[in-house]
Length: 234
Image (cartoon, rainbow, N blue to C red; front, side, top):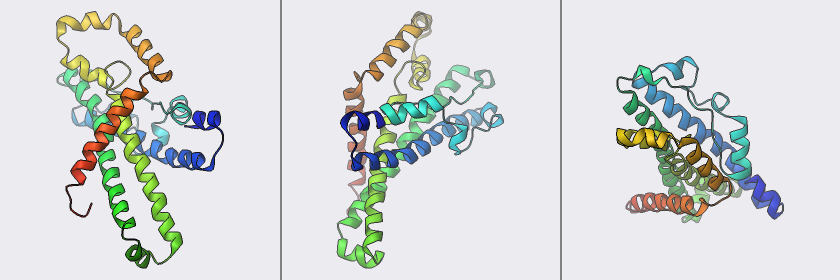
């Protein structure tokens, strides 16, 4: 992101990448947090609604430090949606489902982005016909810009889904992990929660987990492309 841009030298293509990334981050994080709040409300907890968090307004969701971290390092976070597990019939299950809602929402966005990206690729492959439809070269260039946006959109949402499924706090994966963890091991793990969280965050910010996260992200996108590729003209 911006940190890599400054470290590697300023180039126009890098600047374009950052400018495209900003709306992707705003949209993706907002939808992610909205999904948490919406599922919690459906399960009986209206806390997120009371705090105005069931919205796509990014100002309601963004954490300033998390947003800057996303832009500078490619790793960031939004303000957690307030949830009261006591409002759930089954608090442990309710927390797991609300935790799962965020990554699932990003996978949905990633699939939609991949689908639209493939449609743009198909349009670009029919350049003479496309130019007649669009009417001018500037509009054709606009299609290429949209194609770049969709690539970032699909990739970053797949990455956010994988990133948030890491099974340690404060990530959503911890809620799912604690739900499937047998009760006899739960308190043993909780004793070392802070240590596990600190070690994981250090690994993330030092880039030690970059390759596994990238591998998983590309794996998801490969599956999406395979599914979409079953459609003849895509």
